[in-house]
Image (cartoon, rainbow, N blue to C red):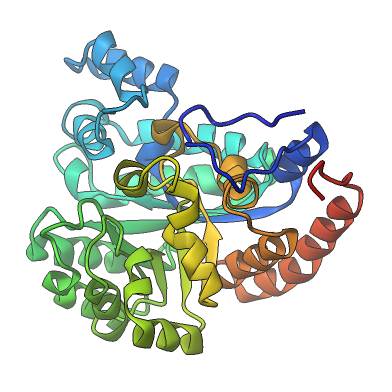
Length: 369
């Protein structure tokens, strides 16, 4: 039986035909997700509800277009800016979005999730503390309600000013009750917004004891953004990072550091720039794996990109030619890269991998095996 293509992913000469048992396996085994934007998880029905609740001037046609992944989809950043400028006026809206996705992610095997959240664009509507507490309240409820835990990663808006970035870090550090905020990130459009512009904010964060993850090398941007993220800004994890493959010396250094890369198999840049028949063959995630880098899949903006987390894990195996052992190795990498409590991570390395092995042992052979 042919497995279900997410609907817009190009086919691949490496493609495996997955049976229902294999599809269930990818939905079921325990996962960690560290690269997921809160605003990119909003269900279409929830978007419509929040527009009505806020009285925002966003039409039903606009919302439908936001959730259509055609040849020229509406850019995710435009959707986020619409949410920030018009819709998300109350902290309780953030809590609803978080709770809904926590339930959804848990149903797909996610046991740990890290939400990236940009407050700067919402500062006209709410304080950082009120927004953060709303999201944290959802995270605190989730273990008992859904069997999933996680944390919040406030993210610098790289399209805003370096001063705005410092303000965000100061707000984060000023909150005494931030057990679910172990670090900060930076995201939004990388092109023309180099990471070194925000060195002062990251220095403040590091001095305040916060961990650092940085979006770099995402839109085909130069590998030096990855280098800067690590050497100047102190990143202990990179989101995306694909262009590192263009610098063998940097690759070797990343290998020695065991630097984790939270990659996204459905990254829109490569879907646009690689020929459909070469998309899977030439995708940089394959090269990163071959070069020995620590990579693991994430969904990024799952509802906007119309991809679920189990599909993100499935695509490297189904389309890129990754092995089951590669998948297991990525699962271990995702645990190592997570910002969960160290004692939890040690326990998961045993329990999750044992569960993975048990589920894998019951899989039937694939037609091509």
